[in-house]
Length: 89
Image (cartoon, one colour):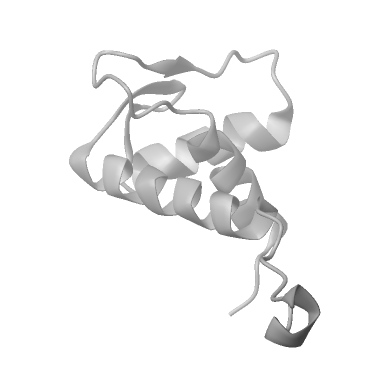
């Protein structure tokens, strides 16, 4: 499976949600980039958000955002570079 442009757009929308509060939603305005407007509609159809233009996360959407945030952290964190013990002496 590869990341299609449509999936990337959906990930971008999900990444905008905050998990700090279940009362914090998101509004994708019709004047926004068309790919994000369409992505929000697909996320709604997949029962990840409560409205076709954003709204709030569903329970499944919350799980998805947790995974998106974890993936972004993993991919954007600089790797730990091990130093051989001999160099520390």
